[in-house]
Length: 402
Ligand SMILES: Nc1ncnc2c1ncn2[C@@H]1O[C@H](COP(=O)(O)OP(=O)(O)O)[C@@H](O)[C@H]1O
Ligand SMILES: [Mg+2]
Image (cartoon, rainbow, N blue to C red; front, side, top):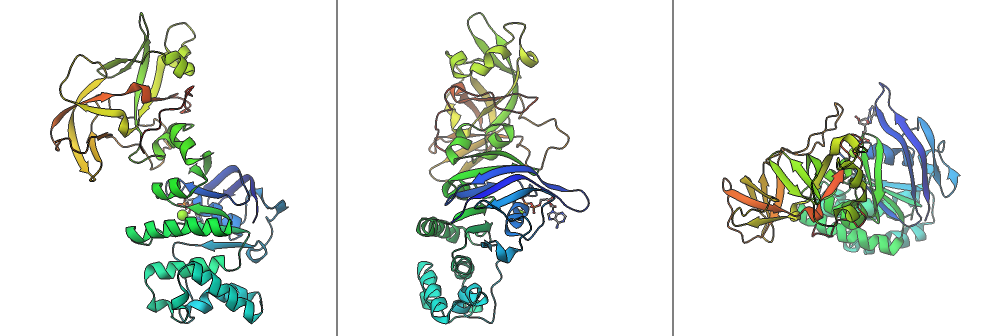
């Protein structure tokens, strides 16, 4: 059990790659924090720094109040599970699990007792005398976890531990991880690119982009109150739809204007998004001429039969229809064009050019069909196009099915 504190953690590799840039984070005792972010954003480097497998460029790492920056890995009481776990091929399951205890010269009895207890917890007790070559992929991964858990480390670090497993096994192992965490309560840092894993495993999720920590919060907080465009587009699957628009004051309210679409914000908008009030062009304090980036999650659309006079209806063509049984998603080109960042250094996690609407699974819609979709602007998110920061809502967006 341990608390981990990262202070201004920075790592610059030879050649100048800034893998981590002043990361500040406290992981509480017993907490399970999941790290997500596009490939190359620094997730593995962060875990390797905590484990002591890489040296910091600047900043400090504390475990339970003790600065461990200069400690070698074996003195940090940290265990790590990788995607490509390497088991000792000529050792049995029992010997693999007990390895770290043997290295630490635990008494033979205790090694046996602890290994067996760990194996039981992982459903491996019947396989103790087998060698890795006689195990399935899932069983091998379990042995790798057993090897990390057996000495009950202060910190458990896992870097995409399930990504080599097939989908069904991943789901089963996810449940097992939850159970193990409940049983041991080990402070855990977990890296994944799987949205569902992140949302279901994490007490909190930490989003990284290009070495910088963007936001840390509960899955619910990140989904409902993303702090910027990057987090908004990254958390949630299918991703939030984003576009550029303009707010224009009218006689009795404010219109959102985007390409050919001009739709009024719902009544009470000034209470729901107080930060929008000075962006409407209503007075001289108008910020950036009323420019915004707005976002709508896929469930914020309804398929409608025909184009009535409702200005929040967009008429478009279904490019692709994805039927997932109890869920149907339509991909379409929005008439105003999807948001693209104007930064030259935008990472490879750029938002897609198509928007996605989640519609009634029974709706008879096929690729190529002309469709009409009503946008529910009460569920809209707004961002500043220059800072990319969220314009906070007084009450968070409604909890739509994720
Ligand atoms: N040993 C290394 N030497 C130089 N650059 C590295 C090294 N390890 C990682 N990097 C770079 O640091 C950045 C972060 O890498 P990494 O932590 O592996 O990202 P992630 O795990 O999020 O995909 C990447 O640009 C990567 O190319
Ligand atoms: Mg990695």
